[in-house]
Image: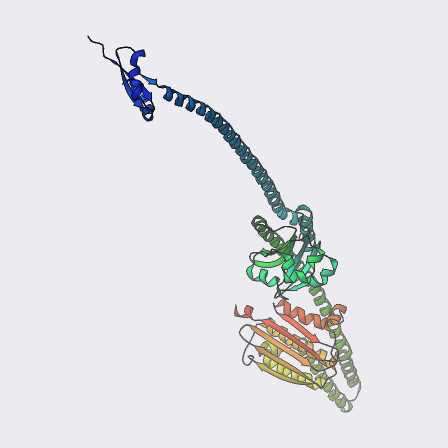
Length: 501
């Protein structure tokens, strides 16, 4: 078997002259010249076994040595670059870790703050439930906001729906000279109208640029304050008041959400306190009314006793004396005494009838309000010489509930009695009108007038208080308008819903 020649690849930039140098190889070697550009292909042939080896010529060897030297420099640079990249990556990882730690700390602080706020929010019902006095609740709220939440300044208002205004009840942190400007805030003014219409918190992001707060000069006296939040105090959607809070930084969404819930809790507490005040006031009014009713009853009994004693008693005494004298006189002379006795009996019957009518006219029960008033006006004008000009609408041929007719009649009677006693006039005007819902009466005079508030506070007129109580007991109302020298006007409105039901 003949040995196969060994394939040797000779690499040189110019391999042609080197083919003759095969003397240093084995005789059985087949030398194939390969240009330098195919060096990579030659190595692949050796790797795959299609060639036994690769021989480098002088120039190719020199090129390889230069490449190795260059590669050694590049390797060092690559190592340094890789080291720098690892250092940069590590620095970036440390920075990311630092940011994650800072974010974790911030989140933890935010969670602690929210937990504190939630704890405070949950403590509000327990705090306010310890008292049903509105003044104590207001003080508790002021302490919680200023001390526990650290609010630098604020105001707490209650809302009066009848007067359509907000009234300042508690305040802290604001200059004293601003108090007169913010004690009472009309519901129609800015920013109260915004809160009242939306029922949502009202944010002033920069109070230094807000015209209203600039008028209070807070941009100068409280330059560190940045924003303001008006929080409505609601109970089932009904406005109870407003809490105005100032902050040295901007209010964020989380704080606005927190104070919205806060306002609902406080609004419910305000509502309960007001219900308690109304109940307590109603109980006091009931007690006062009971005392007045007892006093009125005693006064009526004294008047009745005085009339019975002074008038009926005297007539009965005279009648008794005449009858006794008639028994002692001869029949011819006793006839005159009998006639005088009959006259006294007639007078006595007239007095008894008058007392009965003063106590309660039977016409009111039998015929109703309008006929009773017409009868009373005729009798009143005869007794007092004061002319009554009476106009009415909606009363003709109509009956009302007994208590409504009695209240209207007594109010007119008491008001005209006061005109005759105090007004110093020769005429008065009475007007009565009714629709499906309300019966109203009005008594006016152009007399000397008086101060209603002073009269009621001094308790000098049980008649004025009695008229008001009669109206209020039926769910109505009574207004008294009068000034010294400007006459008087008494108006009563009595609801008819009980009658319809």
